[in-house]
Image 1 (tube, rainbow, N blue to C red):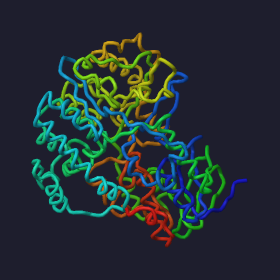
Image 2 (cartoon, rainbow, N blue to C red):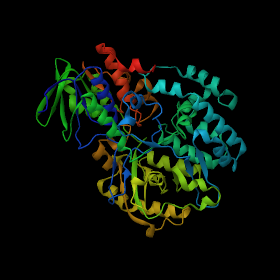
Image 3 (cartoon, rainbow, N blue to C red):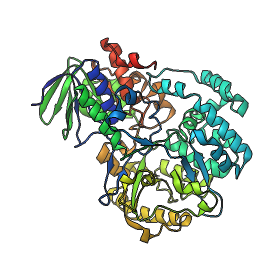
Length: 535
């Protein structure tokens, strides 16, 4: 029989919520996780949405943080079934003419990356490889920043640090004030390389034309490039391993149960109401839900000060990180015409198709951010069955891709239905232009998930997987807003642990990990975090 009183209650079993719950239970707090869906993981989910036997990651795809994610080692997730593969060719882009592809490889294979870029520019190849080496050397710093409460560092100080590491490569202190696009354009002369880096930068958190994010490209984006792992069996295996870790620690999980409200008494969070039943929390409630849902829907404005209510109302979702996921059941994997120049493109983990060059990518992103359907039918694509045969039936392949699209509210229901009916066909035309075997005969079935569906399925407001726009006033110590940047709220005992909090979206579990740090400090818990690692 389900208990009704716990020390801690976590709302939502996304990977951040699972992370927090495991640490809370290990620290001695009886913990309940309440999840509205039938399974844990949130955006870390793998399903068979098109045909039986073809597995598709409907949101999260590549795992770039597995080497630094504390929970993997702290809870032995590999002993609980987490398995990974790291393809040699990591990211590539192909073009609809005879230009060579560009293929970026793992950090231990940078000589191959150099050879690929050098087909266009030796100087670009030299600079990219050296930038990558130096960014890789910053891994401990990147991890420390991710897995700590955010600290305000003036841009001028960031600039001095940036120039001290990269200055001889043409990176000056002024780069911190630039847009990522300006930084890419200044560092690299090749439009084809710029196109791939533009697309990658947007996917990994930095809007191309947001001033003040220049350092993010040189450090964070360059560090993530080529660090990606494939979760064998699909990304949901991470959620399964995290769930098993929670069970092993003694966490209770209540599935198929939507939280209706957070109980607040005398200014303190004391539990939740779900399915008409009250579950009491003697020490704390933590919410993996987005900011507006947590504060305005579950707490309610009556329990908030006017400042906090207005801050929550003003928090913006999208247009950054608004995705559509396309899923394809194939007879054969794409065979790119460009493989005659570089065979690695046919076994590239992530391949960008449909763009003619850098200007094309820029127009595409501007359209999506501006609330317009991009004219270009282009996507970043994965064929995970190349490395993990469990993700497709024998002699077949499962392909998945990401479109950047307008926010869910920008189009009507009928307009989104039209997108679902037509966009995959347009992408297939673009795909066939670079991979001639990608005809309709090679496709057994396909499906497209649009932002309005993502909003309903995973409660990603507006289809924004970070549950909050990445802009200078909503990142770092300003995320979600300055008064709430340390995971604490003005409601005593109520904490934020989802991607509306720092550092935002991505499969890093840092929001849950850092929320635990704040809670451990407030409750004087004997923290297993400090005992294991120094960040």
